[in-house]
Amino acid sequence: MNLIRGGCSFLLVLVLFSCGDNSTAPASRAPIVLKVGASPDLSPAVGAPPAVAAPLVFPALPIYDVVTSVLSPTTTSPAAEEHVAISPTNYCIWVGAISDFGIRGGFNTTKYAVTYNFGDTWQESYLPNNGTTSGSQLLTSDGQQWDFNSDPVVAFDRLGNVYIANLYFNNGDKSNGIYVAKKAVGSAGPLTFTSADILPASVNLNKPIQVDEDKEWIAVDNSTGSSAFQGRVYISWSRFNSNGPGNSRIMVTSSGTQGATWSAPVQVSPVSQNGLVQGSQVAVGPDGTVYVCWLTIVAGGNRMFFSKSTDGGASWSTPASITPTFQEISFTASYRYDSFPSLAVNPNPVSGQAYGEIYVVYPDQPNANSSIKFVRSTDGGTSFSAPVALNDVATSQRLMPSIAVDDRNTLNVCWFDTRNGADAQTYDIYAARGSVSTGSLVWGVSNVRVTPASITIPAGTSFIGDYGGMASSSFDDGVSIWGFAVPVWTGSGGTRILKAAVLGYHP
Image (cartoon, rainbow, N blue to C red; front, side, top):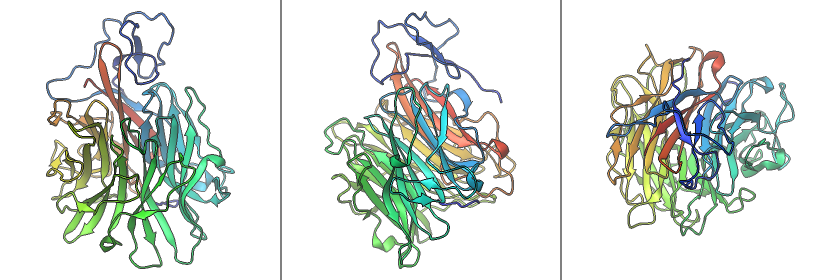
């Protein structure tokens, strides 16, 4: 959403091959020892791992090991509203992005960071601007200059391009729009965007009836099967007609030209929900089917609604409710919060079908304490399971869940959790892992605390973001298959920079 001004780590050794593509490595090649937090040895002759380098071990039910507790992709603060993505063709390359308030007089400026070596080192920079002092502006390829940008969301395609979707807006004339920063990511960097790389997707330049774009999300068709829309990029968002009837509605646009041109926006939420919707996310399945989920205010509370397209976004199914009525989270805190959903689709087809399972997580407030609820569809969105709570502690509050699923049928969920604090001003990041590798969905026996120390937000802080982020991937070292997930968040006080962790597992 728009906002204007407003310790010890547990180190575990992983046996990896050098950072490269995600293909299976030949069994005859010697393994490389990579300590997260140290560069991998890429020399041709590498000895066997030391005896202390034991692999990750899990009980019968899947859980995580926190391989490293905190990575710091960025160095400036304050910041909020973070996201991360992992290259689908090279598991060592990640890009994170966050709204930074440390330059240009404290106005929102998207900062991004890239690692080419599994989080060992990072390169950070801001999206294009004409200066860092108060009054300087952000630059886009259409020649516009902007006061603010926010809500960064990151995605990759299989050609090696990274996409960072953002809102851009001006304080004076109320112009606004959605732009996508698009760039090919090399193997070592630097990753540098110019104004020519900031491509307009939907822009409103001070129209008589003011249209405000908000809360966008981005996804790419990275399917490898029979989809006719491979490589197509999709954006969903909330459109507000400030001076017109109906107010908010959920829109979608798509690009078959890697962001150079975009289709005319299509409304996917029904007209009957105008003014009652927010917080959409978009995802693409292994057959190229596109799914959008959003929150709708209904009698007695909220519900999550859902629509899909099988023709590249040209037409959409009749929206349907996928959850029972639930309550918006509500507790005492100085910061803003919401009950927006997080959506993911399994890249592996359901047995005998072309589509993948669909997963949605969201916060619910059934009583004084909130929960992270999970629903699942195994039939392409025709039906969804009854919600189940993923948190293993009933008391305290939970918010901003993120879900990611990898190519090994592993579900990864993280969220902000206040269970260790005296009140909701103090929280940690917790995670849960599930697996459908055996056909049945099995969750770990307990949640895993990701943060090594709790984060306390100063009482005067009103904004910590509207969402968090998590990405996951896997690799094969020729001996074992390994999986990992990367959740991101910010710290507190002067350490409100982009932070990340690596959660390891053995699928």
